[in-house]
Amino acid sequence: MSVPLSRRSFLRRAGMCLGAAALAPARLARAAAPKRLNVLLMTMDDLNCDSVGAWGCKTPDITPNIDRLAREGMRFGRAHVTIAVCQPCRSALMTGRYPHRSGGEGFHRITKDVPTLWEELARAGYATGILGKAGHSTPKASIKQDMYLDMGQLGRGRDPSLYHKHALQFMSQAAKDGRPFFLMANSHDPHRPFSGSDQEKGAFGGAAVTPPSRTYSPGEVEVPGFLAELPEVRREIAEYYSSVRRCDDTTGAVLRALKESGQEAGTLVIFLSDHGMPLPFAKTNCYLHSTRTPLIVRWPGKVKPGSVEAEHFVSGIDMMPTILEAAGLPRPEGMDGFGFLPLLSGGKQAGRERVFTQFHQTSGRGRFPMRCVQDARFGYLFSPWSDGQRVFRNESQSGRTMKAMAAAAKDDPKVAARVKLFLYRKVEELYDLKADPDCLHDLIGDPKCSKEADRLRGELEAWMRRTEDPALEALLHRDDPEALAKFMAAQNAAARAVGGGAGAGRKNNKKKADSRR
Image (cartoon, rainbow, N blue to C red; front, side, top):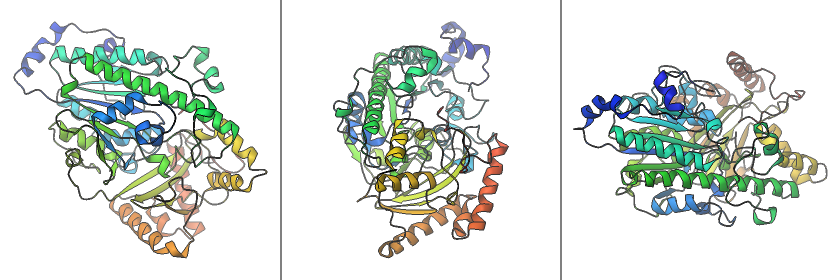
């Protein structure tokens, strides 16, 4: 998806520069102003938190550049994105609002009057640029970046050398113009199609794709605990990890460009994934592995290198207020998130004892509303779409893994139970995330955990009231099938209003899972 461009923006998008003389008056007007902080925001597409070496991944030498960045900054142990699907997640990053409060619930634009980080920084004189995932990360058609390059201009979003080239040009031009910069660099890895996979061979019109600096064999990787240990699953995980290595290559290329631009010391670097891997029980869900993100913040002179923040919960809605506060800019009204600058100096901060996450619809416009609250021990999930008939459909079912699990389910009761849960879900689920981070043992009916279920359900209800969540009535009538059916009818109507189909996900629906995002 692209946005309309002025002639000046078009020239920049094509890789051409407007001569420095054309910007001289603006540069002179800013010459007396104190130098402002540069911001580099890097996101990796579909990168599971535990796929990074610094977060315990045992795949050999998987993320050397990301691990180096972690050693140079602060690593967060309890960071989560707000919603585990691409465009809505990025809308939350760019607005500081929950999706149901910004209008960014699915693959469409947000409400026009909602302020965005792009607009606030541009208004303050920042040069703004985006590399990759450009349409998904630009929540309004009215937003114009000084540099706008999407996957087609970046080797399908998988060529580290092109990220390096354009990042260096953008940063260097901003320095010449005397402007602080905000660059959002978004790798399209490790999103499907995975490196070396049959899907990749059939994608991109047969064009060659830059290979990763290292590829992995099935014997070198670990199958995540929330998936079944099957040969075809292991094979797809190896392809995924080869894509993880290429996203690390891209990370290194952009960081090298920053260093070569001479502006490393004056730049706040924020690194994270937009959500978990595109496999069952991760992306487009609300499990721990869906929303937990490998957040790193490097800020020379402000953040202690090699530090770890393992106590406080940080959310995707906190990115915009944090960046604005770091840059010394005012906070617009209406944001749900709040800045975490005190944590960057090793301090404490109230209000970070839990995190709320959500899901609304897939890229194919199928409505599967979910809500979740997680604290240091437990996670409670609410899925009002689950009625025993509606079938979950998403991109994660398009590869080897789901096909292998479905085949194994015919003879293996444990795999069959996992497949059934993934496809039909339950209205309520409860997990001990400390003992069971892979969410394999649902405790919602366990009398020993009833108090925890009641407590978390109450916290979710209070949050839904506070944020005016339209799913509140469904939660209050969670035991009433008619009330849930009425809620889902309204959800289907909302999907139709933005181009989705009411029947998406029904048991007899033969439509294939959408694998575009």
